[in-house]
Image 1 (cartoon, one colour):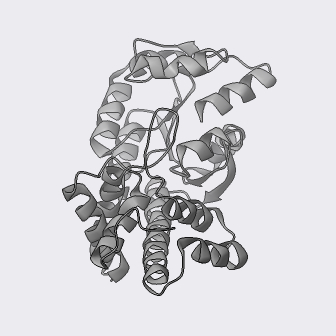
Image 2 (cartoon, one colour):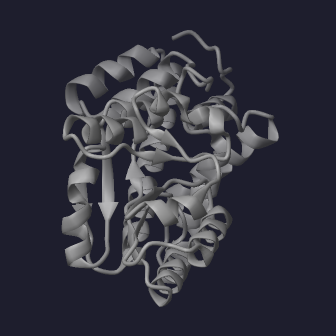
Image 3 (cartoon, one colour):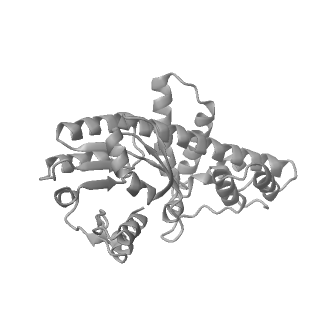
Length: 291
């Protein structure tokens, strides 16, 4: 995301992006494109920037970041856009704290894996004040292929993200069960993918289905993925949202069980599509069954 944003700023002859990460070395590829490394962190960004984008792992990390921004000697009318997958209530709390301290707050969690981010194929779920959304839209367009506007309350963007992630996780579970059924019935995983490619040629089905068909679940510095531990975190949020809304999501319970088995078997650093391994094992197949 930051690389694409810096490319946009440079092409439009705007001041360069200022970047920070807890692991400073991860900023190098962006600095190589002309961005400025702010090694002193978010408080300095709040002093020097009019707009700040954030992407953190969980709710605690976002709360800590918000506290730093609120306590900083920040610029007047600062805008803060969080792109993390956190619980809606957390966003609501953070937005209220920011507003009380003169900071405009928008939420725009992103759909897409790291490789999709690099290819500018993310989809954002955006919510916040109408004028703020108009102001920030060119920067979002520089990082995404589309933005879904879900209204004026920032926390609703996070609700949309959880609903969308539920659909993605459900697709992963369905693909896992379908490939397992195919193998047990004498077909191959590729036979399933032939159906997907013909009838459901969409990135979620094709991407995860292909990884399952090829047992391609390792995540490395050069190979993107979303680990099972992250999937369990998001699924916990989905479960909480469903409970609070009195909605029944039986497929979510099944998928959580399969991810939990991955964790119990020491496979929680694999991509969350690897839950198919637990599905196969339940049916007497191994993870390296013939493709």
